[in-house]
Image (cartoon, rainbow, N blue to C red):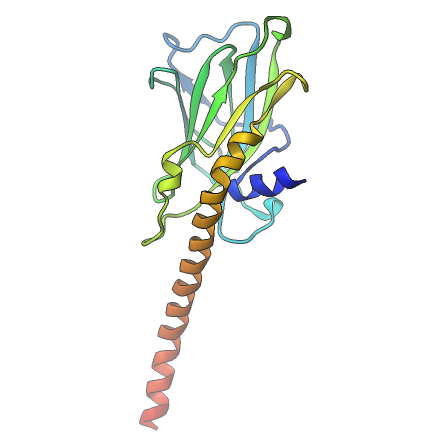
Length: 206
């Protein structure tokens, strides 16, 4: 339950599998998927404030790209109209997933696909991750590093979010979102004031 709250701050949670996804291109020289792999399926959502996860709309045309251990881009694609995506990663590798869109912040997630030899098979990991439009004055330096880490947990015999990693970055993420809400309130107040100003002048003229 506590972890669920932490994940909500990150804007990255487990979700149901998707079936209708966009097409991704991959660099076959650096990304080889054999019989056993990790099937990644998820959605990119648009964050607009204090919404429930189920109320966040899918972000159409969000870009998702994946780099390998050397920083080489191995997958690059655009989400469908509902923000859905899907791609496969080979086991026993380490990747970085990047989520972005023009005018929006970028988030990164580490995906470590290493598994014990006796656990080699095909796995599926489903997720939701949200991003928001850039705001002038908002410090998003915390997003310069990965916000989460996905790895195999032997005890559960499945891929999960690394709770320890999440706990380390959560405090900084909470501050960023707190500043985000404050700037949004300030922005709304400025808009409301500008809308009321003409009425006030007209009243004075009368």
